[in-house]
Length: 365
Image (cartoon, rainbow, N blue to C red; front, side, top):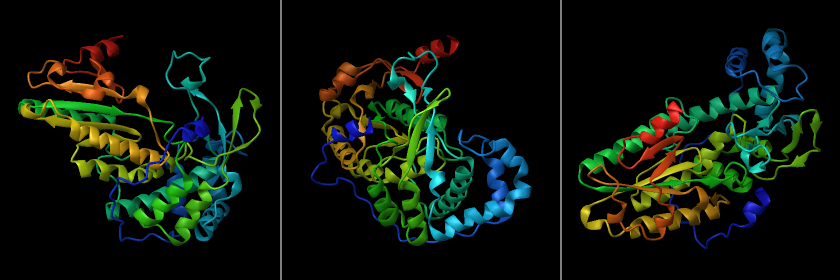
């Protein structure tokens, strides 16, 4: 799937993003102490790989007895910049994306990677040091709500809908576009990610070496019931089910924010879902050239970074100043085919008059 998805992508001639590299540098990990190790293990869910030598719950119980050898493995990896090969094998157990979906359709399954519990402990400790560096230097995208403390689908929706309501109250129309990517985590290019970590985020030295080792020579096998496939290499992507995966994807997609800001288009992302909305004054309702130009640059940037725009899941809605659906007064042009009377935004059903009838019916049902 990843190979065919990447093969369909045609890279543009130029990069539409504008991103200034950060001057901050993160090139060496701080050695982990026993108390930090115990804290990290205590906060990780007891889930691991079927290949784990001991169950995660048992591992957590006996940590006081095996803390020093485990600490030696962790600190050896952090100081050398090498991730043990056994930490990089994922056992994939397919899960249905939603209850009730057709179990015979392979596209309805999500490939969750079950990683060794000890590898998750190592990832958690790296995550904490990387997140501290990113937060201190203000590197992360402000309008990205995925996997951030005190940020959720709820806070993302409230921010977007509040902006839309304020614009409508001011007598404007608002065009909302929901963008979706195909297998976003799986098509991430490792060379581009390493380059972005180095040149944009400011990671170097042993830390960059560690991330290169983390991404290289990863393997997966699929396990269903008692049967397990042979191992296959994973030359692209960040593993779904990993602790670092979502944060690495957020850093990979950092330049996307600069594309939208260049065009002055308000947006809010949640992991790989992006909400773009543009208020239109009464005199501008027949022209969305500005928005189409921005979408063109977004598609170009996605292609340049081997991310595939999912046309089938793109949804467009128009909100009118009177509170009722007035899509006819806005010329959507080529976006007309994506127009929907009810859209599903981050799992929440929305209609153009904000009565939320569809959402209420879905919840009651």
